[in-house]
Image 1: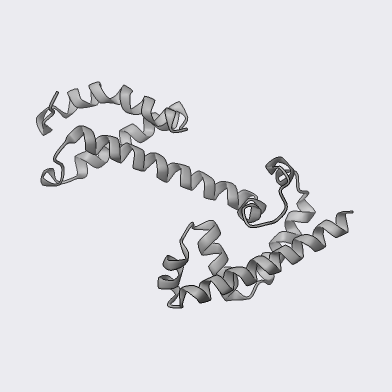
Image 2 (image 1 turned 90 degrees about the horizontal axis):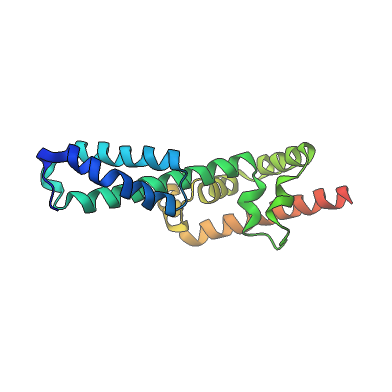
Length: 173
C-alpha cells in the first residue's frame, strides 16, 4: 500500500508493530523499540515533504538509525561506568569481561589516576576515540593534527595505561 502525508495516522497504525519487531530483532528492548518507533514518526513529521519519496522506507531507515544511536549511547555509558571496558579491545589480556566488571573500587581509583596521569593530548585522543567513538581521521580533523600523530598519541596513551594496569595487577598478586 502506498501512503500519503494525509494518512499518517493509518501509516502509524500499520507500521508501528512491524517496526517495533524489527528493532527488537536488532537487540533493543520492547520498551525502547516502541520509543524508537515514535521517534522515527516524529522525525518524519518534522521532515519537509519534498525530502521524502517513500514514507515506509524513510520510517524503516529512521527507526534503525534511532536504534543504532541508542546502542552507541548505551555502549558509551557502559564505558564511562567501567573504563576498563574501553581498554578491553586493545589489551593483550583475554580475561572474560566479567572479570573486568569485578575490579575493586581501589583498582578503579588507580585506573582513574592513570587516565589523569596521561599527557593532555594523549588523554584527549584516547577519550575522543574510545569514549566518543571517533575514527582517527575524524580526530585528526577535529584537533588539526596529522592522522599519524593521532596514532602516535593513541599508542602512547595505551602504553602508559597498560603499564599502570600491569602495576595494579602486580600489586594485587
